[in-house]
Length: 321
Image (tube, rainbow, N blue to C red; front, side):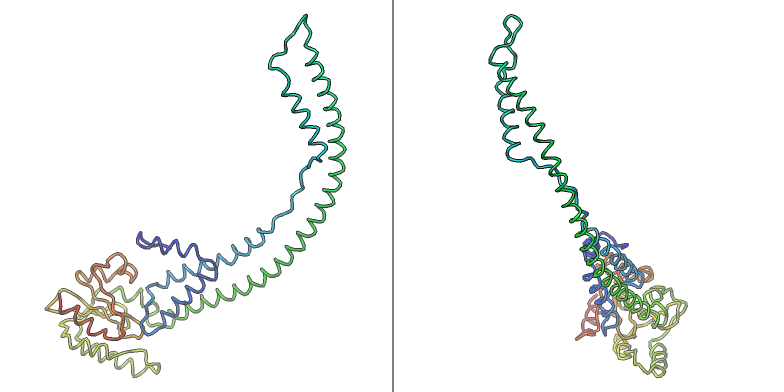
């Protein structure tokens, strides 16, 4: 994933996940998107990128499972005890030979001649026995290898059947996950709140009463009750002097500015969105994604989830500049 240095650990953790782990992680992130507090900081593109990684694991895991069943190798020759004893005897005789043979009258010593003679005899015996044993073992190894090959294909067939079933089930899972991601973002208006809400360059200023009135009109036409207008009523008590609306209609984040502080509040009354307090230079910082804000600008932004005494925490943050 395209993450900064602060998220390398998250990237490594995701890379190390198996299919089940990454699938569960993705489902949690999707559930968080639809929760009342929207604790997920992943954008649509990031979720789809994770989906791509998950999809690749389906094929990779299938291939790994089949590759784990290795082709049986032809067994190597194993010398008999008798053959090993003969080779050890010959080796021991070789060690008895002096580094330099002492010659007398151009002849080697009788002791060396005796050793050579015995070594020659052993060599002939070893070669004859080795040829005999290799031929006997070759026939046995061929039979053993043929049986191993049959067992290999039998085992591979069983594993392939199981893995094919697992693969097909996973294909359905990843397809459903992709649909969940797309359905969530396609059901939002605008199409991608994360994209639209951070294009906040203000074409005009609005009062909080005008904004509240607009959302009330939207709420009356929405049977699902997706707006939490009490948030706007609470913000009104903080006496914002100016409100800015993004380029992409009202259904994104609204910026609330104040005369008594440089801090700005970014709020979206759509259920499931957190509130953000930007300490300075909000026109530039509000162009970032939520992830960029929380990771690169964590000293200049405060994320407040609409849970418990959220407004008291917000009020304290704004007033105590």
